[in-house]
Figure 1 (spheres, rainbow, N blue to C red):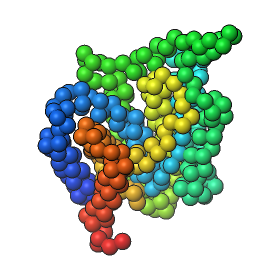
Figure 2 (figure 1 turned 45 degrees about the vertical axis):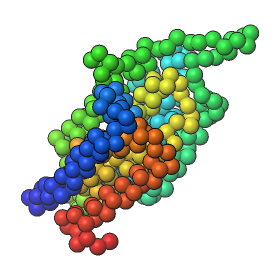
Figure 3 (figure 1 turned 60 degrees about the vertical axis):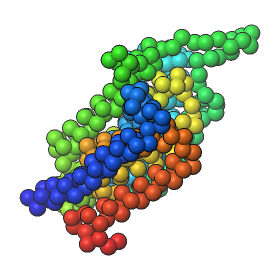
Figure 4 (figure 1 turned 60 degrees about the horizontal axis):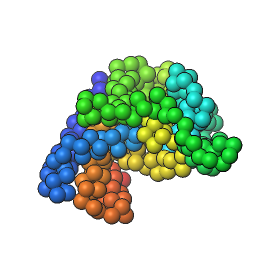
Length: 337
């Protein structure tokens, strides 16, 4: 009972602040509207579309952080899946019924390997996922020879020809409701619903929270802590695969350099949303707020022609503020480091 009440208090302390921050960000957009661009629905649609790939990564990252871990490899796994999916779909014209499950399996396998090394090898998550980040990026470059996998290839005479766009690419990169919402955004929201349901309405989800709250107590209570670690990292890898598929479809190519730094954006969205880096507190609902905050900040700065270096500095300051706020208001914390 005490654990349940602590979690409720944690959400109360950590939930209203991100919501208030989101309202503040949206209000700032009304003031700094980029010569009226903020009042155009296309601006909001594009803001969500641009944030969706990061948000998909953040869904998987939320489960990992709730379990007390971290995953630095998601950007590289995204690139690996993007390259593999593009090779299967563009160059080999594979069916979506085969290429999409294959791509998901690649991402989940990368995450599962990281989880197994952490759980059974007892290596720090930072070290394992850093190694996977480098290895997955290297594998992506090895698959495509270090060049982008695009629609345009050379024929026997040296002329460039355009390959047909796979139906899966067209469907994922499409827009719905009269062009008012991107399919990628729908996919992101579906990931939010699936991950939220898994974390809040299943035994697996309760075990994730327990693992992040106190691993030793969870183990003594009969929770299979090692397999739980493998499962959360496999989920993170699968989400990275979904993001990689979406990235490839939007760009109509697979780039081995894609996803660089995306893991930092995903972590930022999770932390800004209010999920504790120490594990056991937070959720995908809060991450959704974090995604909206970061997405709208990026869009508002963009329509006001703020330089990229200033955007990065501003985002860094927001991450620090979010972490400091967590440390100050966490129910079981006295506010000291």
